[in-house]
Image 1 (cartoon, rainbow, N blue to C red):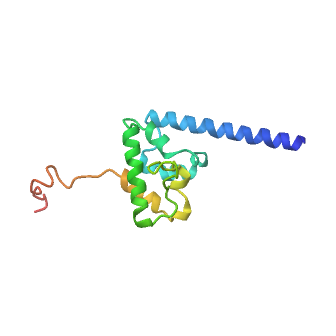
Image 2: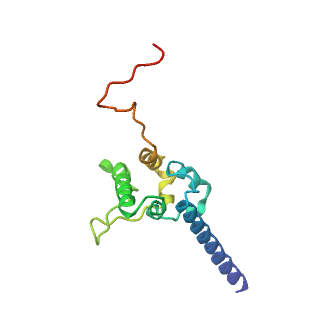
Amino acid sequence: MATDDNALRHARSVRYSNSMKRARFLVDVANGEAPPPSEIPWYVVEHHYLHSMALITYLRHLPRWGDKRSKRFLDTLVALLSDEGRDPLAPRATKTRSTARRRPTFGWLVDSRAQGRRVLAWLSLTQPRETPWVGWPLSPPPPRGDE
């Protein structure tokens, strides 16, 4: 019996510790001190306590992101992955509400069974896009300096 009590106490302390680490991470995200979204997959792999955190929770805590933008981002991510049923592990609609989806987590994002498809989809949505030149596509390209 004493061993069971000690194991239970240990499990509770680990759960509490991980919960506190996730809370500190969200504070860092809100303050802009956490890695940017384009670097998050590698950060999550190193910090296993984040695997159970829902992606929507992280996105909502990003500076200048709200519920609407976070939901639109996740809908786009899921749409990229579930295109023509290519990702059988993508969140599916529940029986109670056809539009409701399971909440994808960081663990789901970096799951090795997806062979990197989810991380690539995440990166394609989070990488900054640069325009080829100022005024593109309506203005002609500027002359090159090496001519």
